[in-house]
Image (tube, rainbow, N blue to C red; front, side):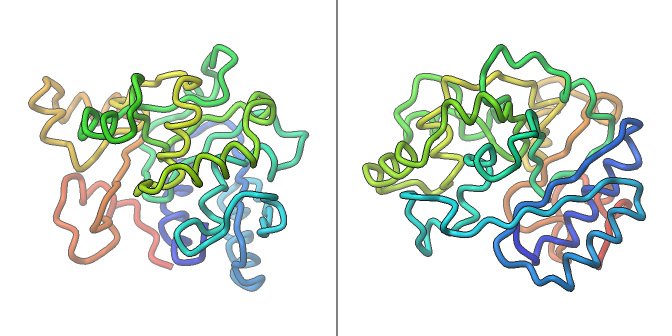
Length: 251
């Protein structure tokens, strides 16, 4: 993560705090967020009642993986979290900062992952297009919400495979999400997008498929405001903007 996403991160954490009864430990992987900002964020998260840990990742951590303008260090944070985070950690739940929680996450956290390194949801929008583009036979998964078995990921994922995949694939517009699907998509435990990674831009499609606003309010735990503009931007006119603004932290 970089510092421009600190306000949305605070909104995400505030929404988790208001819905989660279990203790929460937050790990922030970053490249070069200023110490002053990290100190302020740490105090804010601690005041919220959560534990806060920081892990700085530098290019040296990533061995042979290419570090370029197209593939900055941040590209690898999700894929290589097993190598970045302490070996004493065994499972993490990665959540994009453009996500909002509206229910507890313990059922997802306790999911049986069937010895797979990842659990993720497949959005139906552009599903066939992405599968054809990537030439894959399995679902194309969105990595905005990603449950990671770190022990299994440490066994399966290595720098050389990632670097080789990038070297042999010129067009990866969704970068690490494409890499995860291309290399490890058959090692993903599927989760229900309607509950754990609700694609907010596709809100009307969910309604057409039979969901109701009441069902979404009662059953969806994580709302994913992917794509532009974002709900914290003044030009946002998309679905569920009022839900986000109610929880929004601006600083």
